[in-house]
Length: 125
Image (tube, rainbow, N blue to C red; front, side, top):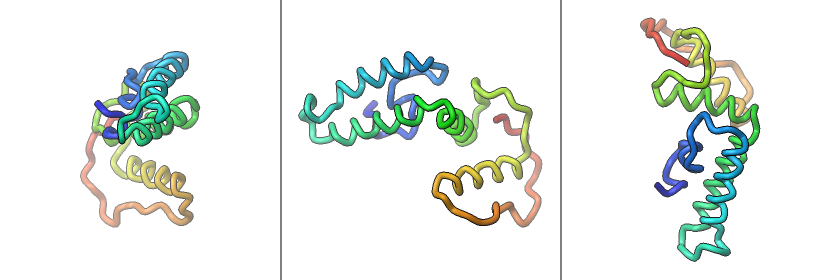
């Protein structure tokens, strides 16, 4: 898979979500060498290199990685093998997503919660 074609940062670096910091760094070096525009003459090499660099920048920082993992598994609709938290109702999940979105784009204001109460759904985060 071409790294820039996926939103999954782990897939961009071709690593497992449980990879250690050393494995992340090693994979980044391999992928960066493979896609570096000075070494790879393909027309999309720069785009691929930037995608790999973006993934590494997020995954090498423990705080950014933890935030990414929380959001990543919510949107994949699966139970995270990394995070061991109790079940959350949909209002809590929407609040977390909204806060993360606002933090990501530096938006100030109130957290938007649904005006009506959605049905209770068991969601694992």
